[in-house]
Length: 172
Image (cartoon, rainbow, N blue to C red):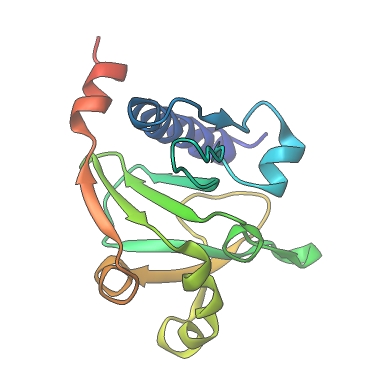
């Protein structure tokens, strides 16, 4: 495990903990896929099981967390450039996508993530593919930096503060 991966994984786990905390306030059952790598690769980070009696449809949830606010969402299109491995933007089966910015404690919720991905071809010209260069890492990934405002306007994404959850989980 490279240091870059460890750093990204650490902040990613914090973001997942916040979303897990918030989801459990509203749903009786939340399945974590973190402990089951096959399930995580097949699905995403969390699954809300269907409950016909409660009127809840099954929902697959993906969470990505950045340390610092950028104003953009990074959609990974190539996971490991040398071996032609598709990035999570193409492989995720998530229905709902949460993108968190840890420093500002703000999260963006994209309710129909698959619709965004179906229209990703449109983004080819509007948002060119770029190498991931935030940290030096062994596997070279690429993706699209897509302005948050564009995603909110075109796909009905919403934002919310998670400061209270962050404080509750991580204040000393």
